[in-house]
Length: 151
Length: 108
Image 1 (tube, rainbow over the protein chains, first blue to last red):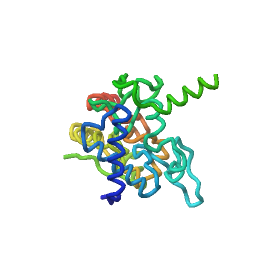
Image 2: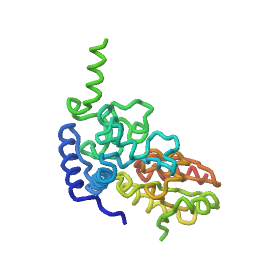
Image 3: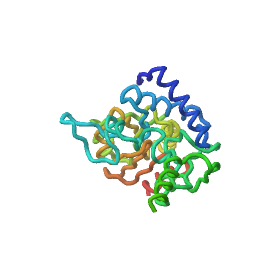
Image 4: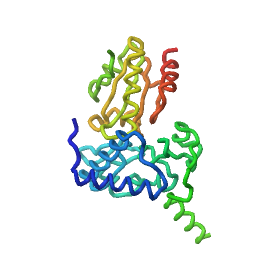
């Protein structure tokens, strides 16, 4: 049995998850055990790597020379230095899609409306419309604004 | 009772690659929410397909080599092996009916 993360990090992640769900117009998963699993994973990554890295990816490990196999993801200690998979991850902030099922619709489905059609989320869940399109997707909105300014 | 058995990087070859039966491996991590939804479904399937398919689970936090070898990205990921080779990859939570279709395809 894996040792539980610190109570401080667990509480911090519960507070964060509840606030971010409200801000982004999403819900925490209706099965509490699912949400609790993700909250514990995020808290554990805070305790070990300093940042709430998504616990639903497989991250390669560094070998004794500090190298790692080529992968979509970096070792956790490297992921902690960039923001792609730090919760709320880029996928959440651009597409409002949470493959970890932390931020979902009231029915417990991840929003897939904004994903590219060939994304695995579309294949798994089909088209799940965003019930609150005026909320969330901060990064997508910032990028669109930047493009508009530049264009 | 034929619950999925734990396998490790070191037992993978003997249990999966050398298996006479098709094999389903559930790649999971202790604190991954969707893994908690997939596990009971895989457990039910392991009972229904006892004697036809072998079921295993691998904790990716403790076994980094095999997940790297099979390019696991998101977890949970379910990999189906047939004749010692990768036959199918299923990423994320799926309903039991979907998983049964994939298993039936492996048994055909």
